Image 1: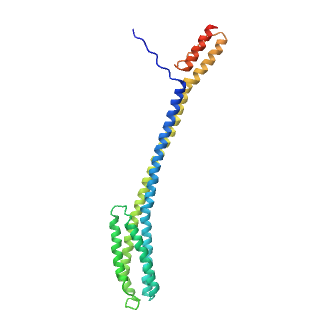
Image 2 (image 1 turned 30 degrees about the vertical axis):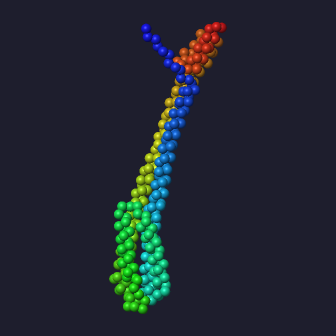
Image 3 (image 1 turned 180 degrees about the vertical axis):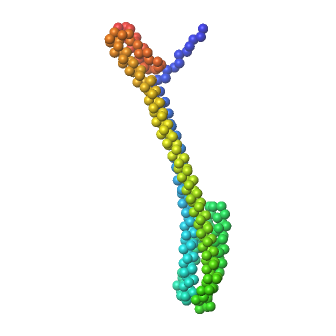
Length: 255
């Protein structure tokens, strides 16, 4: 003959604890995931600012420097030796410093080649303007400037713009990737909120079934007992409320 073993009762406190624990766990996991993703995004943003932005700023400084050098050459063409050479010397130091920043901040594919091209054009450019201009046949010689200096000046500007475009394109691409990552970081929070609402509704149903309804039946049975009806709440759960029903039934049977 088979005997059925009575399953251990799950206490009300444990039921409530498990319900709230599950809800908190869901929100905690979603929050932790979002924090991790946002931390990664923050790290990526810092990397972009430190790498691509530095390279872009360096190219802007190089462009400004060669524009001023070009102005210095024009001053020399007009016979203004002191101001012309001072402008060229100052601009040259700014250009070389900016070029060093770009050279030591290579982050993109083939970026080294772009920097090498700039160095090559600048070396050729400097080799021409290093020769004396004031008090020579070059002073006031616009044809010399237009045929030898200006074409190299334009090639150098183009090479610098190419490096700038490379880093700007990379920064835009990284920004789009960060935008997608931010969406993915937000989604777990949205899902967790939605799941939390659904779980709360389900949890409310279970609380009503396992706690509120049995208490109402107990109260109703006690009132009916006062009117002469046999006590019986018919509580289905095997927990403290069932024990309370049995205790009340035993008590009423002895009265």
